[in-house]
Image 1 (cartoon, helix red, strand yellow):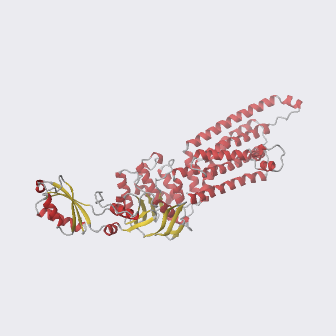
Image 2: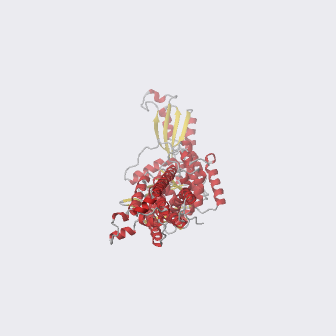
Image 3: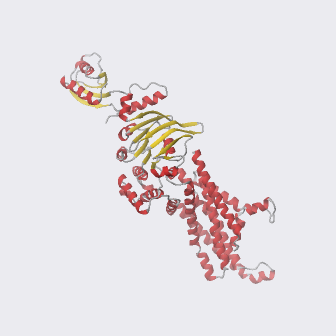
Length: 258
Length: 339
């Protein structure tokens, strides 16, 4: 008799398919991602042309995997910082604004059902978009010679990192009835987490080191460089768990505060 | 079926409902009547487990709203005020979502969706996007969402607000057709609505129950007797005198006609059209024939007779004004409340 989160998930997916802002955001992502791809390849061909000069001068050697594959995944993770808040902004905020949240609350769902259903729907959308975008990798594999282990780890990281973005976005959406506010809050939290390690000098200790540990950028760069470390996976797992938990608590608070 | 015990809800300093207790039996349609801000929506939200009460308890079909919210939500259908809907879905998808949420299998869902569409007359718009529906259809869809899966209890918050008269009539007919089969609580601040659809009335004001009972019970208790508006062509003075001595009549008041009983010669003009308000101790079934007979036997012409007896408006105003410590308005019978 328990329906769980699945009805919510299915309904959210239906809503996504009819949402203009989602189409615009997906199109923007695909376009910008293609632009980055083009720029990265252009840059690489210039570097290759100067390869002999670089070798003589003792500069860093041109490396296809590092200069193309890693860059490509890094740019994807970066673009998603802006795109994911657009996907998540209406999830809860809009239901509260239009009052459908009251109807949702009168149906036999627990708060966790609601949170998980919505979370997975947004994740599905992101994954679908990344799969569409993976033609870049196919092109690279066809015309270049990337290290497939690096590509595999970077792609996996490219799924793990936005999973954390979605959790942050969902939490932001639960805080307000205004979609725009939700998107901005999500973006600010994401940017704080992303840039946490960039306010410190390299090799910092104490607080600086702690901030670096919380840096999404530094953690996600491990994936894009082809390093699959348990601590990075765990970090993103913890971010997901914490923000989903906070979302649930917010929903419960609204129950008492309304 | 529904039991509410000493329910109290505070919003900060404001006490929205105050020690509310009532019961609704299986198959009853309870009209929840009160001015805006009386606590109707608050009570309904507690019953649907939207938020918990500050104190007190409530149960639906034996399930406690505090300890078994999921079980409660499985047996209720709720139409929130303002009928919030997912505008981006089509009608069947929205209904399927609610049925899905209630845990029905694919085949059951299809059956219930079709049944709800049939019952609320949504057939012609079943594949249309909700955002494109007219207000009347949206209201019906809200009702369809509430009745899907045949819940034992329906909670409808202002189901007819914002509709045109034809749509209101249709929605009321829908609700009335549910009597006996389902237990319904519906809130409204429109008085005739309660008379037309409900088997029992609960008047609440400032979070407290001000009066309760069947509409007939309330009317007789609060008012006693009946009121009739009589339009007759005849000599004013004589007609009045004759009506005053008709059986059960306690008061006769001239409501219209030129130069009302001013002692001038046309007081006795037999062609004058006059309207009287006749108050009686007896029910309309006794009063109306008595009045008709009186007039006809004198040879005057009876043009119109209209019962004003069942006016909840009077009761409502009396109750609400009484709560506020004021005297009820003495003459409120101008409001139409007849059948």
